[in-house]
Amino acid sequence: MFRIAVLASTKGTDLQAIIDEMKAGEMPGIELACVISDKKNAYALKRTREQGYKGIWVKTANRTREEFDQKVAELLEKYEVDLIVLIGYMRILTSEFIEKFRNKIINVHPALIPKYAGKDFFGQSVHEAVLASGDKETGMTIHYLDEGVDTGPIILQKTCPVYVEDTVEDLKDRVQALEKKWYPEVIRQLAKRK
Image (cartoon, rainbow, N blue to C red; front, top):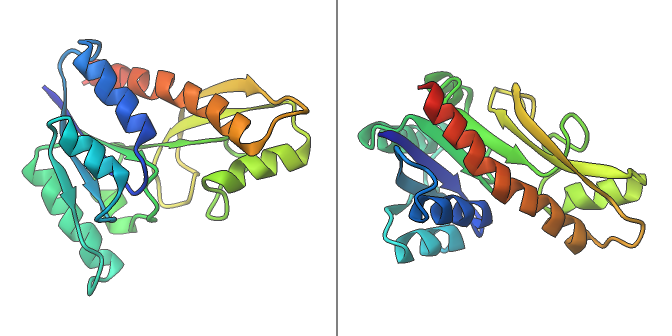
């Protein structure tokens, strides 16, 4: 089995797409080992547990970034994870963590990297920047994680149009539709390579 772990801080919308494909038999040989969150009340954890998967909260209080990442690393090793999938994970991982799991951590970013990427671009701010720019196209990027923010090697990019009348919510919905379709597909392709 190719075992994945999801690190999530928010709702886990893309996580649901992965779970749906697993339950539909569309991800043979792939297993969701666990979902780990730094937020006790993250909806991603609730979603995970309700559907019969292992959801783990790792508290941040009284832990340095290094100590927190070390605890997460221990859990990933315990569950013998082959791939770490970031979904709305609102922490910047330490270089030690990234080095330990080099080329085993992937992230999805709601824009076409290198545009609208970096530490100031997450969530709604990405779509606001796209609309303010007047760009006619946006999309999503799935990439490996490295020590920078949104700077790792690109695995896949998919585009969608930006319309003059679009709101942030319109754009978010269109980009998330791409993420839900292509994140499971990238995981399938990486599992095949192993």
